[in-house]
Image (cartoon, rainbow, N blue to C red; front, side, top):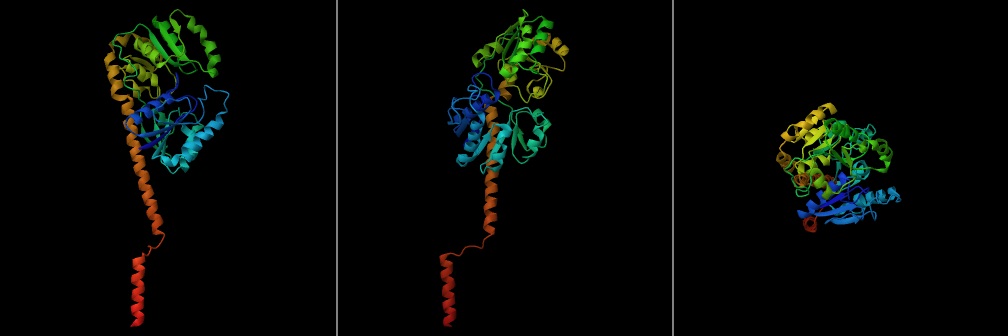
Length: 378
């Protein structure tokens, strides 16, 4: 199958450090290539892939803030949904709403995986404007704000099976991994460490837009139980998560999906999280971690972590959250979409043919002419 993957441009594919959507696009693309599909990736020029790379800009927009982003976005839309669209059996978009207007007008089947949070009121009229476009959610919870969209299915993201290694031994510190920004729960994570007298290590990125917030909470990191280590790579993440007592995820908003949770499960590390958004679709309460409604509940669950079988965490990852499972789910949707598009094309051809009378062949014309000659002679 000839497949186009249309990626965001803010990060390279895969992202060097932080960037969940970009990592998932990379894992999906590489596994499709491994399975023998002809894949073209529309992305920034510093992306690394075994697929055919159609570079839209020399490097990711995050790495070149002086670049005018609208120029790159315009090229991405035109090339993916216009210039090269006829080369593919299917176009898979990962750029959310940005691709909707051209996806509607594209003759090649397009469907979009929505990676973003959808509980913003301004998103509703935008989705209502394009009710026919086929969409894929990354969790069932993500759909709740816009239930009437044309959802084709939910496909949870997956990671390469060998990306992280199973660590059977119970660690000695709590781990917080993600981004420092309001609503991500880092303040609650530090409070949890203080109230349970357990060390916490914080591996997190600080975006320029969140620098003021970071400076506001920075005094929290001066506590002797707290160690702030900044942003980490995948290889560093393996040790960081694998050697932890538990991953702490007190995010107090409805996240559509959290890759860090399945990264922890891949390492065999239990998860302590608030029961928000998609969390309950990932963590099985009492089996791979504990789901809480309040910080007070989470304080109590810290002592229960040794009851969690770390091998069960890894088994859950291997059963439900690998890239192999994710790609097989997508291939089913790809095949269905292409089949339905072919049926629609055949139907349109039949309708066009019915508008015109049957054509007369040369042989039929000669028979009719002979008949007229015989009738005149008689």
